[in-house]
Image 1 (cartoon, helix red, strand yellow):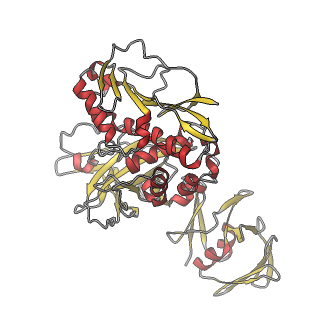
Image 2 (cartoon, rainbow, N blue to C red):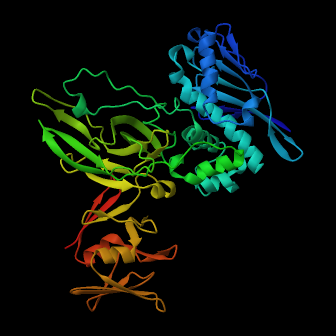
Image 3 (spheres, rainbow, N blue to C red):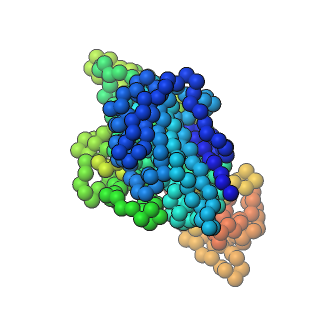
Length: 508
C-alpha cells in the first residue's frame, strides 16, 4: 500500500495527499543548479535566481548530518511568496513511502519546498527551515528503518522512551503542530545534527545596556535559535537528554562530532529597585560547566503561557562567560535619563538558554513571576518534570520562602490543596510517625500533638477531636493531607497566590 505524506513546518496539519503539488502561480520560471550528485536546487524567487546562490543552498544542506538517506532527496525548491494555502508555514518536506516485504520504505524522489524566498535573500535566512525540513527526511527514513512502524505507533517506540514521552497523552501523529511527534523529531534533529548556520545566535542587549544608545529595535523570529531552540516549550531540549542523540546515531549507524552539552544553570529573580516610579527587576543565574572549557553563551528570554499556548516571546539579554551573568528587565537609568518598558499583565515566565560553541543548547529552570505586586513580586521555579507531568502553572508550595519538591505532585480536591504529609510536617518542624497497622499518622512539635487516620476527617489535636475540611488520601503510595488545615493547626500562616497556584506558608 502506498501513502503520500506532507509535513508542514509551522502549520497545524499532517495531511495525507496524493499527487504532485504544482508551483505557485506567482513564481517565476526556475533557475536550476544541478549538484554533482544530481540533486537539483531550483530558484523560483527573484533573489534566488543565481546559480552560485543555489549552490550555497546545496552546500548548506551538506553541513547537516546525513547518510544514505540523502540519496532519496532529489530537489529543493525556493518560492518567492507564502505557501499556496496561506498557512504561514516556512517550508514543507514531501514524503512518500511504501511497504515491501513487511518493511516500511521511504521512496526516492523526495523534495523540499521553501517559501517566502524573496523576503529571505541570504542562506542564513533559510538555514534553519532547511535543516528542519531535512530533519523530517532524516528522521522518517531512520525511524522507519529502525522501528519498522508508522509514526502513529510512536508510543511504544525506542524513540519515545529515549525522549521520555511514552506516556504523554498530548502527543500524537495527528495532533496540532505543537504536539506532533514528527515535528518533535525534526526539531530534535536541528538541535543535535543541524548545521552551524541553522543554529546561529543573535546577541541581545537588555534595557540597561541600551539606555542612551541608538541601538536598533531588537529583531527576532521563531527561527532565532537562541530565542526559541524548539517549537514545543513543554518538552526538555534534545541536548539535555543524551539518550536522544544516542538513539538517532544507533538508528542511522552514523557518527558525529557531537559532545556532551554544557550543564544546566539555576535562574532566580535576585531583586528589584525603584526607578522614577517604575521597577527594574534583576535576574541572575549560576555559571554552567563545560568540560571542553568553551566560552558559553547565555540568553535570557521572557514568554507567557496561557492554557498551553505560548505567546509574547521576548529576548532580554545575551551574555558570555567572563561577564556578569545578569539581566535587567522593566526600567533603567543612567546619569542623564531613565526609561522603562510596559510589563505585560499577569504572569511572565523567564528562562535562560545556554549554548556552547558546537551549538549544543540546554535550558535553565523556568521561573514564573507574578507582577501583580510590582514591588514584591512572587515567583515559582519550574523544572522539566513538572512540565512533562503537569504544566507551567500547577499547584506548588513554599515554606518560609523555600519551594518544596514533592515526589508526588500536590492536587486540588474539593477546593482544597492536598500535599504529601511527611515533607510538609518536617518543614513545619514536626516529627512524623506512621502506624502502618492502623493507617495512623502522628505528628508532634513543641506544644502540639496531632493524630489522624488516612481517609478520615477526624483529627485528634492535643487531647481534643476536631474535623478537617477534607479527609487525607493516598496517591501513588503517598498520604496527602489538606495543606491549609494542617499548616494552621501546626501554628503556621498560609497564603494563596491564585495566579501562580502557589501556597505560601510562614512558620516560626
